Image (cartoon, rainbow, N blue to C red; front, top):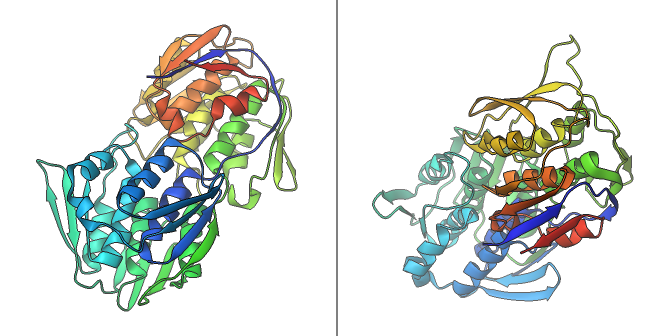
Length: 434
């Protein structure tokens, strides 16, 4: 198990460029299974989850050619379907949350998919009902072996239908869209997720020959086609990493420029940091965060207590609440955070409390942060990263703390952040891997 050793208190300055988006990469790489022709994808992040997915595709006999840094060509002309029944395949799926995204593409093109219960972050229940109810509505038969934790889905021919999703699940929508593009007839998906990365998946599929209307809305209309063809695609910068860098720059920065952020795809993220008093400047497609001597949490217009809550896009992504919580610990004022989607994601705040933060964990979904106004720095300590997003939050806290901190289980951070210590060191951080 690897660890980060972080010497806190060093101010960061300079420029940093975000990686390609993890969540988009997982979706569009799985979409390459929908055609036997070559699909080229650029700006692929070099992170553990994505690399594991690429390795899994290679073991399925998908041809993968690396053209350069973050630039891959995939060709799924000779997929080995028998490998999907192997213990090795099913075991590896349990360690990769993104493996669930294989099912829609496999079902659409080959008429069947097998997958074990996917792994990933331990942040509470993450049900898969939306995925499989959608497949069933398209005409597939579904079974689940509870003893083995194996899902099976089969269909001779998928047929378009009307779907009202029970939740605006991003991966659920992505899976259903990938299944529907090769289904017979028209599929209408209402209450669809519409995050930028889902939009990007739809744009890739259209460039491959799919017929999709309503991209960027929660109502998608898909007319199935016989087959898809070759295409090229470039992944957006990762909005979660951009938000993480805003948090770092706000707390310990001495003037940090985040390059090429695709500002129009950040949605409410900049405004959410502004609610905590963080000042930022948009400079073309870059975002500059000046040094923040003090930042004050806003109230609502009627003077009531500020609340930040996650919500489906274009609301605030739940993946950034942990970063916002850390930033709030050194603000002036108080704020209530409401994590609606996952019942275990706020438990990491115990580490921040041990570092000296004033946080009241009201219940598994809500926490009140009383800011220190930079008058009481956090204290260094030894911690363990429970998941990707809590891990980056603890790293931010350690960068600001008095003394030297140690964060164990950083493989969780590696799942979502590319060469993080090298990029932060270039800004002036003192961080080592051991």
